[in-house]
Image (cartoon, rainbow, N blue to C red; front, top):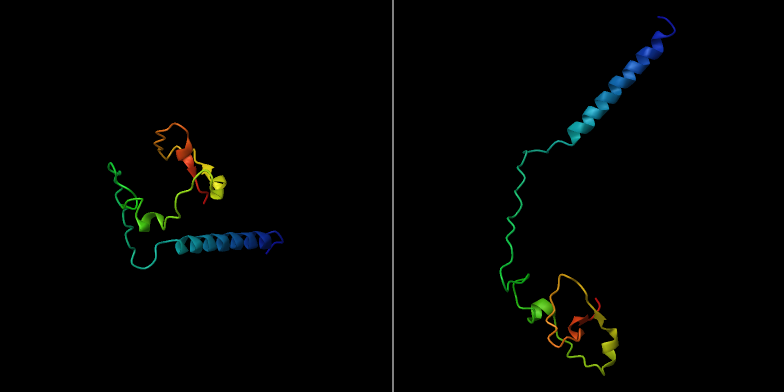
Length: 106
């Protein structure tokens, strides 16, 4: 054997070993036993008018918890309220004062 043949053979063996390792890793990613079918996602349906998620009234105990009572402007807890300017929430604001936007901070 010539002097240059040994490094070429070593390089070839390294390439074969590398390809074998990559193939073994790829086979590890294949589906496991049974080849189960993925379930299709649940069909999404839009909400209908007056439907809630969860579908109970917001005034029930399960939806909102125990009521702490009304907060007047003279109550010290009134200063802890923060305005909510979320576009996802529709406020009635019949008085036009913006006081309906005041909520407790979670």
